[in-house]
Image (cartoon, rainbow, N blue to C red; front, side, top):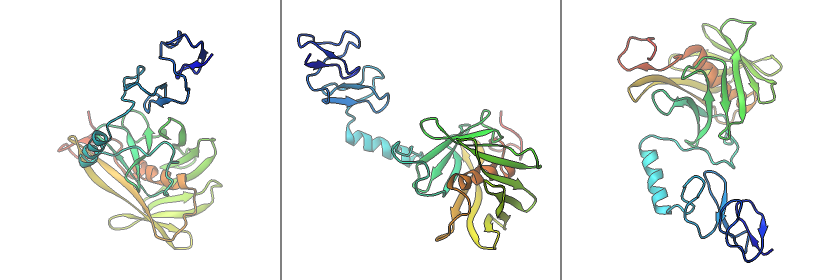
Length: 264
């Protein structure tokens, strides 16, 4: 056997030309293949498109750059590369919708989509699940039953990351052991994340944005330079989602509709 199927990796006699299982051209060198970036299947290196999903195996680099420029110039956001961990640059992020009624996404400091948020339709109402691009869970935000206006974030392993207790002045933040570590204190135009000792650790704020005729609030977190947050990275990211849940719009509204009137 000296010919190989690049798809199923089975070896076949030299006289065969096509794999009887996959109907793919056999190759003498099993490494002489191209992997489809969309579906992950391997195909002979001389093929131009993927038979499985019809994607281009060798996209024109000039066209790829032009497509990228069109996305960015239209205010779009690309996904973080799969080989880069989520929020690798830190917890600085913005929580927004990429279209009027789409799901919420976290945009990192690099401008790339770091994670997506799943909920009931387009509502920012717990339970909410923050997911990686591959669908794996980063954390879940659920109602914290022992207190009013409070939510808690659980990691993928089910362990608590942080608890966020809403009040008139802001949000009290407790770490995974439920110890008080910081407070989100309302200022004139933003919130300051203040450590129990009084040090300002980060700023959190929101801005109204209209997309496709729908209005929603976008929330952001920016740590202070040179500071170390007293909670884990995903707990800091979870604080942005908690602020949206506790103080933001539950769902987008039609532009021009009365304040607080829900979307259709």
